[in-house]
Image (cartoon, rainbow, N blue to C red; front, top):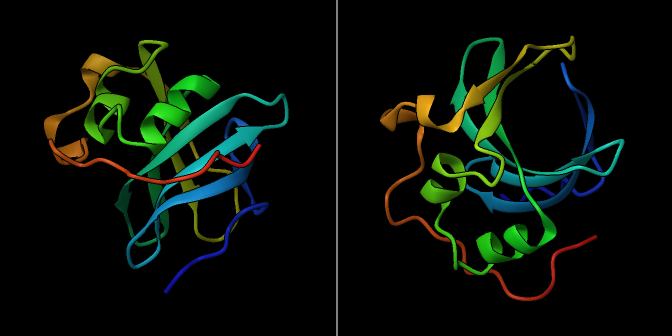
Length: 130
């Protein structure tokens, strides 16, 4: 099932995020590009589903890095473990729509089991939506 999420907004402890593109959909969206109200771009990596919430990593990205991730120049593990900023947001999105939790984490604090597979890459064609 393909989820058409572009333009959808979701509430986080960081404010509203707007989905720009679903990058990977496998039984639901697992990798998204999104932006906040100020226009900061993120790649959102799904980490875990719990009974009442989903856990995501929001990794800040430059437009150039987003393109490199989309076309596979940067693998998904590296996109999380070595972000341009050196840190990422570990967020929860509650299923009932209430505001979740957000914590800034150093990239080197991410556990191996939280990272994408070692050889996972996207190979998307075309320019990313703006």
